[in-house]
Length: 146
Image 1: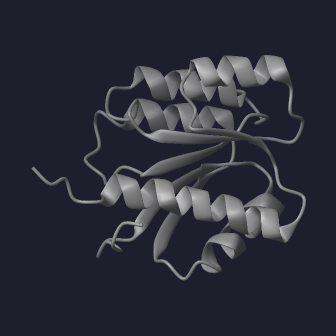
Image 2 (image 1 turned 90 degrees about the horizontal axis):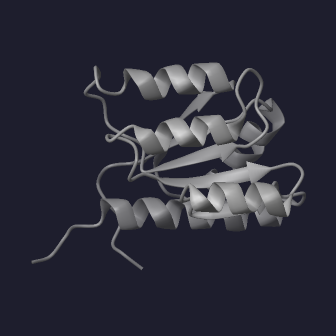
């Protein structure tokens, strides 16, 4: 395990279901680590966010939690936009789906998701997923030793 960073993890959640956002926040809180979470609730706004990145000099998220079934543009279109934006292309993506399908998994894995999983149905599973998300952030924020 890497030492904790003095900066909180910045998580971008692209999710349209308020209950899932609530569960994700609750699960993250169980780990006792500082984090900030920005929420975007539809695919069109997510693509707009991606397109604005060249103009903005904001802190980038250490991980993007992406629902694959979003209104306006699906998660695969959002993931393609993320991978085409140089300032975001390196960020690890956790793809969540309410209906796991092998074809979807193959497509998003080709686009480089770190984790592809069905949305948890039990709180313990949300907490485990939150732990994996925070681990990605710890790795992203750990100092590079040369």
